[in-house]
Image 1 (cartoon, rainbow, N blue to C red):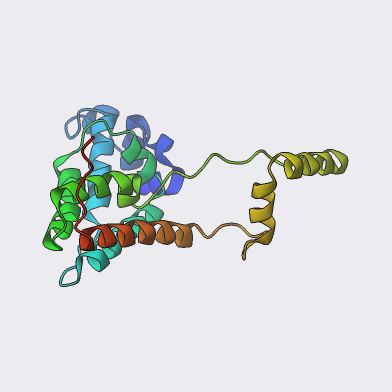
Image 2 (image 1 turned 90 degrees about the horizontal axis):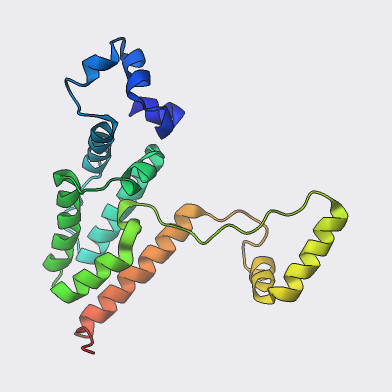
Length: 203
């Protein structure tokens, strides 16, 4: 994990790890089957580090747990890629997911609402999310840049309106604030649906 923290996930090879530990690569295979099993263990360590709040209302507890997961992901930026490339959920990962569902069950939410809620949370339950596709780069040449901006204003006026008039226009997005904003929308919706006695539509 230290190697991944300092040099990124691609640096974690069996050979590189063996060099860092001062052993032969073959010595590692006494402990893990291959690199994938090593990454499984690394993911488990990160997930195990997410603290579990207790004694609070379900929505607050769930929010705190997921924001704690985000803090863990920020401490280990490589963990997102590692999680997204796992092919099977480990017992540790299943325990974490079970704890999120138990928090909602303890709050009185129905199995159907929890099912849909877990889908809505998606990767956000792990402390990260997938953003929209990045916009094209602005040309370096001033004349090309001006022409590109005119074209954008003509073809995508709503994007320009949002980007030029929003409160933080011209500044980089606050990723933590955006994460919490979306999380709160989801949790508020789950709370409202629970209070309204929501049941799934039958087609």
